[in-house]
Length: 209
Image 1: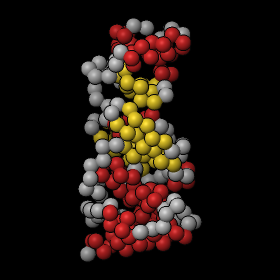
Image 2: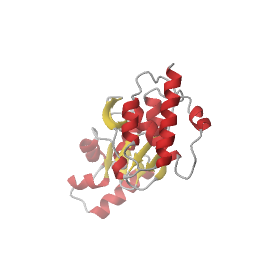
Image 3: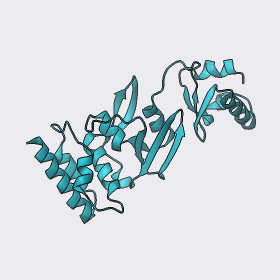
C-alpha cells in the first residue's frame, strides 16, 4: 500500500478507522507498520487507538473536532459546555468538545484539542438529535438535555448550589422548554436531583421575567 494508493481510496473520508484498510490486500501487520510510519512522517494524526485523521495538506476537506468527537467514541453525543455554547445558552466559546457516553469516562488529546467524555447511564442516553455543523452532521444534545446532563453530573458527590448555577451565566432562555426539562428529571429516582431540578426551573423562570 503506497501513500498515493491510500489517498485515492480515502481522500473523501479523512477520518477513518484502521479496520477500514481491509480494502487493501496487505497483511494486518504490514498495515499497522505503514500507519505508524505515516504518523511519524506527519502524514497521519492518530486520534486514539485505531482512529486516524489524514493531516493537512493531504486531506481534501476539514473535519471539525465535533465530528471527530462523535465518531471515535460510540455511543456518544455532544453535551455539557460544548453543547450549551453551541446553542448560545452560555456566553463562552468552548474550544474543547464535551460529550456524554454510556462507555467509560475518559479524556484524551489529539489534533491539538482535548476531547472530554463523561459517563451517563444508558437510560439517560437521550435528548439529542442530528444537526448540521460546518457541512457535516453531528449528534448533539438539546439545550434542555445539555443543561440536565450538566446538573446530573455535577450532583455526583456534590450538593446543589445556586452559586454554581449563577456561575454558568445562562442566557437566551426564551425558548428553553421547561416541560422537556421536567420530563428528563422524571427519568431519575434521585430526590436530590428532583430538588435541584426544581431550583433550576425556578431560576430560569425568574430570569425570564
